[in-house]
Image (tube, rainbow, N blue to C red; front, side, top):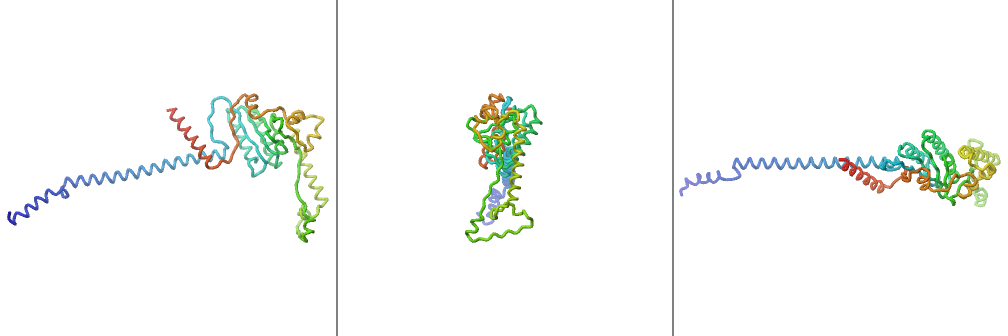
Length: 330
């Protein structure tokens, strides 16, 4: 083979080189386009995945917020009537679970629900703020007037005293256990005096005021007779408000010859309270639902502060029930 043939042979070999083949270049270009399209599709899929996850998160968050504000997760029940339960538990106060805002929110939700045949207000409270108790009492009367077809029954568990009974007095009927403690219809103002203690410790009390009675019942100053008399007058007025509230709801039931004793601040057992007319019957919330309202199933409308884990658990259960219901419907 001569040197002159080498270039032609090299050209022949180069013409068979797959890298420079027009068909192969087209295949490579197509493969490259497919690869880019595949990557773009993966990006779109990830975006949709993030979108749907975000959508589910927003949905669950909305459900959990409604649960926290409304007091309960939306619960599906049968077409049969149900008994609504609202709990008043603990000391009645502005920033406590037994605040007027919480209890009233539960009562309003219960009265609005069409399938509720009646409302049970379960009370276990030694009392608390007369203002908060008064708010609840007033709202019970308003709801009863607005929904005359629905009865509200108060059920006292361990204790229904002072402000707890103040609230119960607005119910259509009051139930209790035979060993419940009921009553304490009175008002108190607590305090301490440290005058002698300061003197023994050699401490001088320096109190400056711009009003004659601005240091009203100061615990480090001697008791002022006029201030004490004024405080006692305040207590008498609030006590009379308490008495009037009880008489408004229980005048016909109370024993006529026991009024003075009833309003003295004493407490009685459920059995004694039945004889005095402070309660109407002995029975539990379950008894009232089953025997009085004839709706044995009880649905709790009490607003509660749930922990994050409880909210997630309830939200997941509700979501699964919703998906199952939609699947069954299809």
